[in-house]
Image (tube, rainbow over all chains, first blue to last red; front, side, top):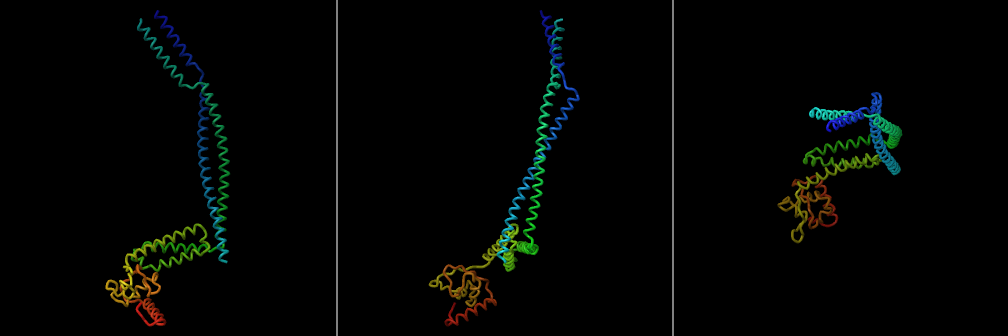
Length: 87
Length: 249
């Protein structure tokens, strides 16, 4: 009674093992393709971060120059008025 | 025999477990395919995003260059035809003098009080220049005025501490007039030095015959009358004699 039980157990284990072990796997070349793709994605993410940083710096610089231009225009007007007053 | 069977079963189970665990660590073709699809989609999205950002950055760079040019032009227009260099040199000279005065000890500062007044004149002149309308110069002049005010305050404090004062009482009770105040032993013990008190308090005594109860008079150091004080006294007496016979101030 015990023998058949043991045989069934061993048999089923071997079948299960072969089932798991025999599923299809990607080739070396395919794995390389995937890794290259991952590297490309990482590189693009870094590039985007750099561009965003440059964009922020440019926006700040433009805002500062806008403020300076406004002040300069205002100064020009005041100066003109003063010169008119002097003449 | 029983042991052999049991051992065999255990060995088989262990080997199946190990084998299946190892097999699970290996990527399946299906999982690879899924990852390839996912990564390709992500890469394409990122490429589009990157291209968009590159264009935005390029446009912003152009804008920034245009603003730089416009600002340069505006600043050139602002100072064209104006004598900016001498104006800036004057401001530099004011700064230099203020720096020098700020480093002096209280006693030295008091001795050079006249220079503080001349710096005030320079600042007043700078304010009259049309270029002082430009914000950066306006700020600079304002800062110089603040520094000068601080020096003036220091001088006033030193003078306040150094010069004793006398609070005028009533005529009825104290008989206070400049002559009598100067005569007091605690003041000069010499009535003829009354012009010193008058000249030392020109800001609050216009007519030496008129002082008011509660006035706080500065008492300058006891000394012979100066040229200016003597001159002021002569003018006072000649004016007085022209009006009425001489009497005590």
